Length: 64
Image 1 (cartoon, rainbow, N blue to C red):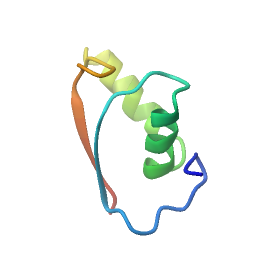
Image 2 (cartoon, one colour):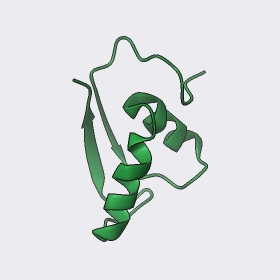
Image 3 (cartoon, helix red, strand yellow):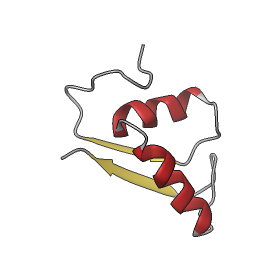
Image 4 (cartoon, rainbow, N blue to C red):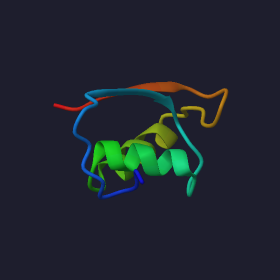
């Protein structure tokens, strides 16, 4: 199961939108980004007025 703490090995990028707190899709983002970086990313998105959920803003997340 892909949840925070899962070690992503094959995927280098993820295209997604901003998900609802507590959702399984947010768990996927948290596992992909790692650590608590996703919390900072989401706080920044809220502060800048990004839209969330299905018709919200998209994001391209890349692993270095």
